[in-house]
Image 1 (spheres, rainbow, N blue to C red):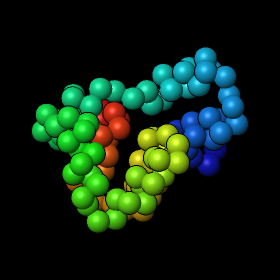
Image 2: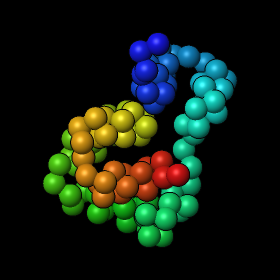
Image 3: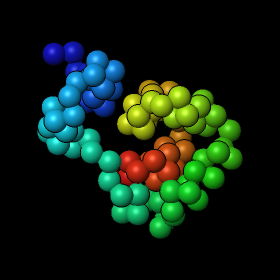
Image 4: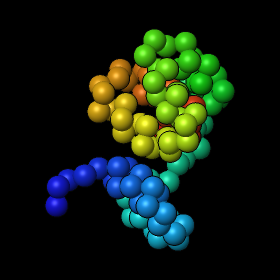
Length: 102
């Protein structure tokens, strides 16, 4: 028990090619399934496209947007953003833009 965050474990499972049914069970157990972006109160009713445009304008977001273009799952990128200590506004925009908003 090293206390690895569930999104990191999910990322490793995806990289190892774990079957979809088992991955879905893991997501459900740790509440990792993406949610609709419109339910986030912090998003101010912003659409994912609007959030993405604002995110692209922020300095420092290039690294994370490039990770998404390379095909990394949004949950793994969010985890990296949190590890890098990005500000809350950037994190919330990312959540709305890629459907991770709770």
